[in-house]
Image 1 (cartoon, rainbow, N blue to C red):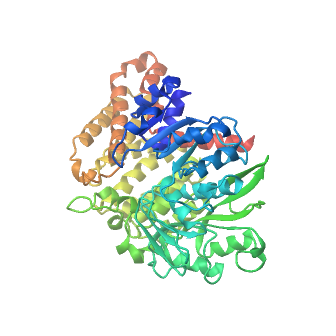
Image 2 (image 1 turned 90 degrees about the vertical axis):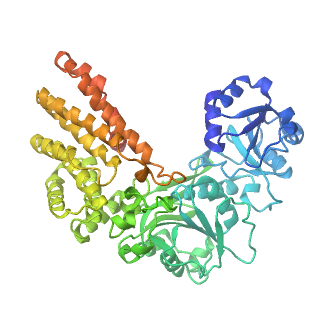
Amino acid sequence: MSIGFASALLQRLGPCHIFMERASNRALVQELVLQGCAVSDVADAAAHRAGPDVRRVGILQWPGAQEGKKAIARYASMDTLVLSSGNHYRPDVDSCLFANGWQRHTSGMMPGEHAQFSDTTLPGISYYQKLSAKGHSRSPLRQTGADADLFLGRCAQAASYIRRGDHVLIDGEGYADIAALVGALSYAGSLTCVVDRRAAALDAIAMPIATTPADLSAVADNSIDIIVALEPAIPATWRERLQDYDRVLRHDGRLVLGWKVDDRCGQGLVPASWAEFHAAACQRFLPEARIVQQQENGRQLLTKTDVEGQYASDWMILVAAANPLGGEADRAQFTHPAFAAPQVEGGPPAVIDFAAGYDNPYLYRSMIQIGERLNDEIKLSRLAEYVIEHARPGSADQGSAIGVLGYRILEQRMTEHVPMLIGLIDAYLDNATTDEPHVIRWRMSLMFLAGRLAELVEARADAIAWYHRASVADWSGFSPLLATKAVGAAFYEGRLHLSDGDMLAAKACFQRGVATTLAAAQSAHSPALGDPDCPVPFYLTELAEVMDMGSQCANAVANLPMWSRDPGAFWRTVDIRRFGLNNWARDLQRENEQMRAAA
């Protein structure tokens, strides 16, 4: 329990200075110090003063309503209180803390944790933070019970859609609390809040923040990465508010918009029904999901569902993406929020220079970037199909769309569509003759994909030819990171030769993978890594993947004599699951989901 508790605490609060009853928690103290925390006895808290960047965290076992006020007084100098409440009555716990200068922690309810709270009980561990100002009793952070829990739960769900560096527009009741929660629960880069005449204090939020009147007149066109609008301001009608959001949202932006279902639904102030809301949103955006608020076994649950189903819900909450088509007209103002800082003197590294690499760079986050692109697989495929048909032949835009569609065919094992996709790859390679870095990337990636698809339809000779072509292609015009495809192709070609009994050909493939790995390792990495003060964050991670792939090729070469003696022992040594682990995990997840659906 101590190891798990310590790890969970750091995941939420990070390394910090912790004050607790050391004598009665020796095992926990050991785990915390081994994870980088300083741990002191709470009795010595006054003697430990530090600079403003040191986070002081108290851990308290709740003693009950009678002793609660006295107990928490010992933690008055803390920034955060981590509370083990046991089975004590929640209203007693919360009221005591709120009355003595504490509020619920902005990171106290992560996405998916809402169901752990009830009107009468808290989770095993709950989190509170010291008020930086007097605060106000109407804030959900200063309230107990289901209504406050639901507010925090909705904010946590909305924050889960915010991408790294996003400029977030917050429009809705309780915007100051939403801003505080979004700042704590997401990787947002900056905030703009729609404020009314009763502007709440926003200066305690440690990130760039601006305000705008309800008409959004201060917000430029195509400038917002995501809008979080829960009970938003409606200067005119809700349909006109959708038009406002369409104007300010970037071509690769997102929208989380919701209203409470109440008497207004029949008065035109909010949508009359989910069907009306969804239909209006479809005219401007690409709906991806619905968040349903339902009651089950006495608890309120927030669940992500599809947009087409019929569900009873206290709220209508839609998650939708902007339509990225047409972004070419605003190509000159494109920046990727996660990589907006200046890089090296000669310009940004090719791997993040999307404005130069794509005719419509807004396609990158909407269609390509895993974890950020459209969540609806059908809409994603339709978007890819449209781009394939309408993008400039041989462009990075067209190549990326072929890749997106091709991997969906591979993941879903749609063998009947393989000939069509191989034909698209052939045509693309005929047109993609430039040395533009992102064209090089897609040219090589599609060769590798063609090998996978050829394997799927048991065209083994074609697969070998495609893998060989990818393994000898020049990746240096893009980045050493592209060597993952060359090394991967060499490995995959080698295993095909193994199963055909051609040991010499297999060995040559594995040796080619080792040589490519060493060449990538010996490349000049500084230009691709970018500014040392603001490096490309994923560069070394993906370079490590090149090394990992190369290590499996080296492992195969070193242990190849074992193949003749015992192929199974050889393969266990090489351990194919490490190779392309992300794709393997996604395939396994897809298969498990299909099995559950069929049960």
